[in-house]
Amino acid sequence: DVCSSDLIYKELAVRNYLKKIMVVFVFILGFTNINANEINDKVALNGIKEAKSVFLIDFTDVKKTAFYLKIIEGTHKGLASQGVKSNMVLVFIGPTVKFVSTKQDEAFEMENEKDLTSIQESIKSLASQGVRMEVCAIATKVFNVDNNSIPKEMSLIADGFISLIGWQTQGHKLVPIF
Image 1: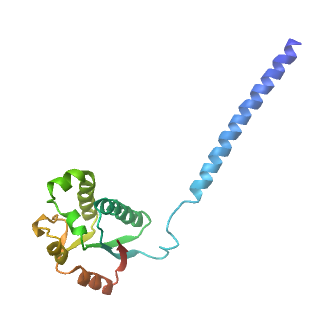
Image 2 (image 1 turned 120 degrees about the vertical axis):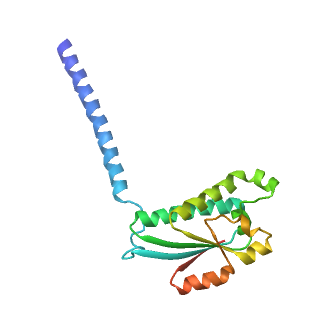
């Protein structure tokens, strides 16, 4: 019968359509559930209105310096997005001071242009967010970095270790990165 085969065809089409709707519904429901379990730091930040931190930055590699400065930018933004005021200080010691300098050896600059540019962008970004950045004058002397080449967004300090002691005594929590 033609009528009965048309009816069977329409019934199969409706069933296929309903299956597709169910798949979409299950997908949306699953995706919503994933978002309901949002990844955050609220247990660690429970009751905290302000986080006082001092990062000790001591790297021998320009790429690692650029990478971690981006991570620290994200940390600062992450605290703010979770309702915590960040009182952050970065203290640069050791060979890392070479990478924050605006005057580089020409060959080194050509070879590492992308990372050096990223470092300078991070310095500007962090400064604009109120992050204090300090550069150890002992390290600039040891690694032959001209103090006048330190970006204006950064403060030249006498001794990075003394600064770390001072910030920790004032209640900043040490975050060593090396």
